[in-house]
Image 1 (cartoon, rainbow, N blue to C red):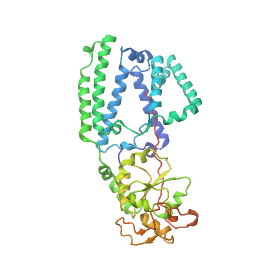
Image 2: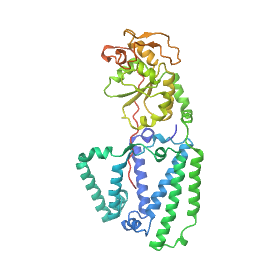
Image 3: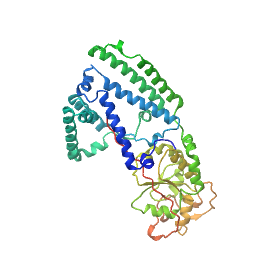
Image 4: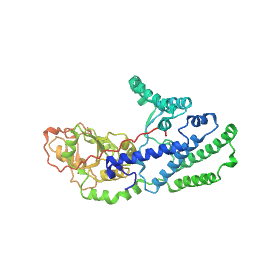
Length: 411
C-alpha cells in the first residue's frame, strides 16, 4: 500500500502525538539554529541585505516538491492522500497581504514568532500576543463577511499542473528553474545591498543546484502513474474483495442506507444518458463510465466524511469498472449495487404498471426492462418507501472515515 502512513492506526493516538511533538521540536530547533528567531535577520530580507529566509523557505518547498513527485511517479506515495489546501483566491490574496505587512512591521511570521518566544525574546512574545488578538478579532467579525471569505475565488483542491492542464513534471521543472534563478538573484541583491562577498560562499551549492535540476528532470521522465498502474498495485486486495462479494450491496441495503440520516449516499449511475433518462433511482447522478476518472478528484475531497458512494449500471459490469477506477484513485467507501438497475426494478417495480421485463439479465449490462415512457425517476419503483419494504440482506457497508487536513501555514 503506498504511503502516506496512517500513524494513528499504526501507533495509536498517544504515540502519534509524541511523534508530532518530536518533529515539531526539531523543526523549531532548526529554525532557531538558522537564526529565524531573530526579527532583525528576518526583516533584513525586505531590505535585500540578507535573503536567507527566502532561500531556506523556497529551498525547502522545491526539495519537498521534487521528492514528493518522484515518489508519486515510482508508486511509493499516493498523492491523492496528501492534504492540499483548497484555493480561495480572493481571501487568500487579502490574507497574504495582511500577513506580509505584519511580517514587515513585526519581523516575524507566526511560526518564527513562536520560536522567538520559546527562546525568551520579548518581541517574539508581543508578536504572538498580536497574533492571538488577531485571531480573536477575526473570530468575532467573520460572520459579517462569511460568504466572501468562503466563496470569493473558491477553486477547491487544485494544483498548478491541473490549472494549466500540463503534466506535473513540466511544472516541477519550471518551478525548480525559477527557484534557482531566484537563489542566484538573491545572492546578487545581497552582494549589492548587503556587501556580501560571494567568493567566500561554498562551491558545493552549485553542485546542489545541478543535482536539484537533475531530480526535477527525472520527475518529467518518470511521469505520473496511470489509473491502470495504480490499480495494478492494489489489484490483489481489491480483486479478492470483488470475488468475495464484499462490496456489492443488495437493493434492500441501499434503500435502508438512503433512509439513514447519519449517512450521506451519493448514487452514481454510470450508464449512458439515454438509459439513465428512461429510468433511474431517485437522487442518482448520471456519470457515464468514461467520465468517472474526471470526477474522481471531486469525489475524493468535496464530500462529507460520512459519505457512501454507490455505483449502478444495468447489471454490474460498468459499475465494477467504475469501482476499480475510484479505488485506484483512493476514493473511500465505494460500493456496487448488486445486480444493478435490473435487480433494483425486479425488487421494487415488478408490480408497477407499464414496466415489463423483456429479457433475463445475462451480465452484459443490457437493460432488461421496457417502460411506457422515459420518465427518469418519476416511477414509483425509482423512489420506493423504505418503511413499506422489509427485505433481508447481509450488511456490507463499513464506513471508513477520510483523513482530515493536518493544518497549514508558514514555518
